[in-house]
Each structure stands twice: as structure tokens, then as C-alpha cells.
Image (tube, rainbow, N blue to C red; front, side):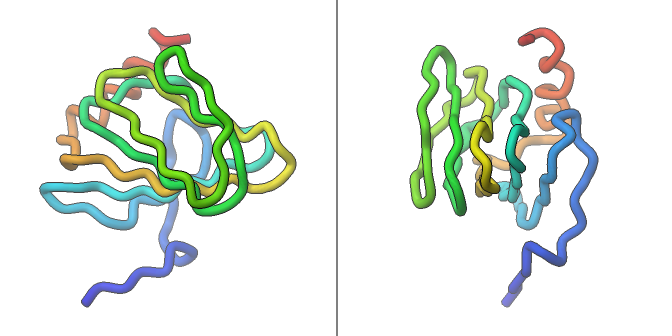
Length: 121
């Protein structure tokens, strides 16, 4: 059995300049914990694999393609591959999200959104 406390996982630098913690992955799936403090957001990007977001705490906005919707705790949002998306915390409380990518993106697929961020501004 593998049990992990998210608080004990070291975050990693990313182009979004927000707190992200990858805490699980295998060939089929990758799970990442994101914390958006008030005023923080992900930069709009595209992923090469399907993604879903599950809101763990707080509320914020999810933008996928041309749609932007307010979301809150215990909501699940589906984000198909190749569609630009981003998350925003426009509130005054923490917005915590579980991000699940399936299948687990290859190293090149993981780096592609970083290269694409500048093109989507």
C-alpha cells in the first residue's frame, strides 16, 4: 500500500508560478495537486491527453475553450485533450484542485504545454 500526505510532497517549479505537487503516476494516469491562492491563475495551455479537475476546496473559475464557468468544492470538470484551458482564483480564499491526466503524458507531451503557453496569450 502506498499512502501519501500531500502536505509532505515537495512542489516543483512550473511556468505558471503556482504551487503544484505531482503525487501519483504510472503508465495510465498522472495525479497533481494544485493550490491557487487568491488572485492566482494557470496560464492558458493545451494538454496532449484528457484531463479532469476535481475541486477539493474553495471556488474559482475554469475556462475550457470558449466556455468559462464558476466551480466549487466537490465539482468535477472534464477537459478534453487539445482544447485550451486554464483555472482562476478570483476570490479571497484558497482554491485547491486535483488534476488527473489520462493516459500519463510522455515527457515530450508534458513539456508541450509549456512551449504552447506563449502562443495562447
